[in-house]
Image 1: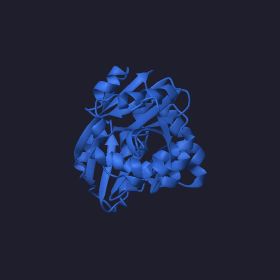
Image 2 (image 1 turned 30 degrees about the horizontal axis):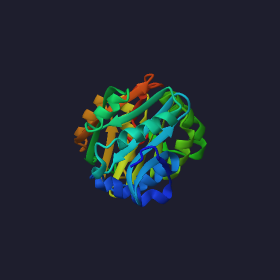
Image 3 (image 1 turned 60 degrees about the horizontal axis):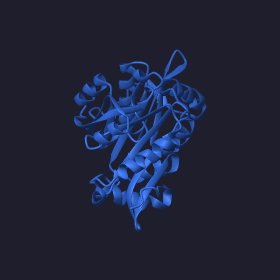
Image 4 (image 1 turned 90 degrees about the vertical axis):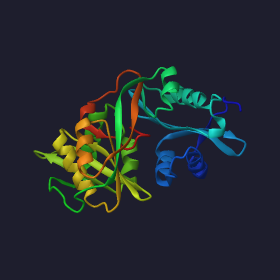
Length: 274
């Protein structure tokens, strides 16, 4: 295969992306892929009519870009496709920091491309204990909150994710905010793909606020919940609330350190987006 022929993918490639994910024993996450193909820049390599590999690049201005959904069909393992897709995404990132979450299988490739490990993100899954009960500390997001949430998100992530947030507000099942002295100091949302509801992002000033946001978002969920976090305290708390750890991934960056105040980012939107 000519690895120079990386092509842009769009929503018409959704079925091919789902087939590629299934080839690597990843779930067929239709809504997740649809969202990423809409708000991100997806690239792929084709083996005749089939999709042999994919990667999704999300650019958040000159300071930060995120890479996710880096997949190569099993029949094309160890043939250089992953490296070609990563180099294409990196060449188009246009940011001082490029970041991703890596599985153990992807670590050697990313390290060879100059990425360094900076932490671990823990994935918790299960039925949230206490569903149906809210803390009373948060309220539903309204359109009037958009500017404040945008400013808070930019301050915490160190990047302008306005386009992503606009798309996310249509994609999310719910979004809630937490106010302190009349100012929005935290927000959280959730989104569903199949039976599982993913809680993310969660931005908060302190661990107790993050917990309140998770409780209030999870209170309406009757079914499996997923939460991804690199905060050890939130991870330990999640395990006591019916969400045991299921797996983990490595946070990796290339270039500058992650911008913003990451101590207030308790969960990402999803691992593919940071």
